[in-house]
Length: 383
Ligand SMILES: [Zn+2]
Figure (tube, rainbow, N blue to C red):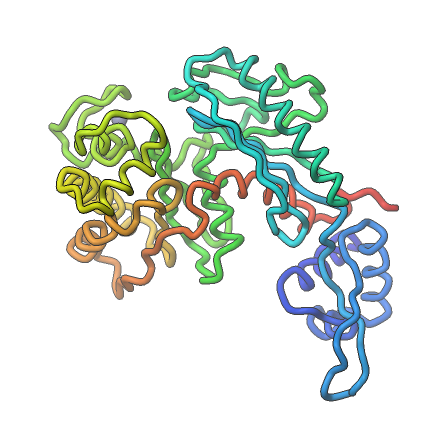
């Protein structure tokens, strides 16, 4: 009971403005005495602080308001991409406080080597966070691969890295501090759900990196499917007799709207950052780049129309690299949705691009720990 009430009080403070203890009592229906005892414990655990507020007009004297702590407990997010490693630390308010990124060609390299380098980057980020007064309470790793629901800590398959059955903890210098892997598309969707202001509760989030990943948030919960494999939008056929796909099927979305396909169609060869390159060409009104992005947008819109008809979301979000190319993808995506969505009334403003862009998955990895603490503050040690 107390554990639940701690979460109720912390959730109330996390959900709004600067509240006093009396405000929290009013909001939660708990007695003022109970709130005070719970607040004292949350302060003791380092989750809350009390700050002086300006004199209020009503009473005319300064008050004390509760706020989530910007020091102390924090989450570390780590990320392995095809061509980079990255780390991010977020505080309890959900604010990212530091970012680290190094370029590395990770495809085909031994997993142990990649993870050893990532562990070093993570340790460096944790040391820098300590300098800001932050203490990492949990570590989550965003991977472009399949993380089964039943087998905690296992990356079953990450085709673009060349990984099969990798357990990061087996390669981590201190296994008890190894990060828990999670699919990057899921983390990008969760970051969008937690950070965006729109208040959508059922979200289809599609992001592109080396592959295409989609994730579903249904009534505020990540939907994983029976085994944890839901969201393979990249292998939904958009042309039944289309080009063969490495997955064994034909005409998959990834063959038309995946990074490699768009680059090829635009007549560009990979080198440097492909998303930046495409955006530069499109901005310069290069006809081949514009045509390639329009074709990708049409294929994406076709697949998304099916997803919308199936799920009836109140948020449809282009994330990851798609967010950074949204300007050129959106017109074709919108046209396909307008022609094919039968959910009524279809509100075109359901579709938007993520403000988080390619940082979404990494931020989501850092925020996962933060959200777990907010929903169960007893995870934090008592001072
Ligand atoms: Zn396929």
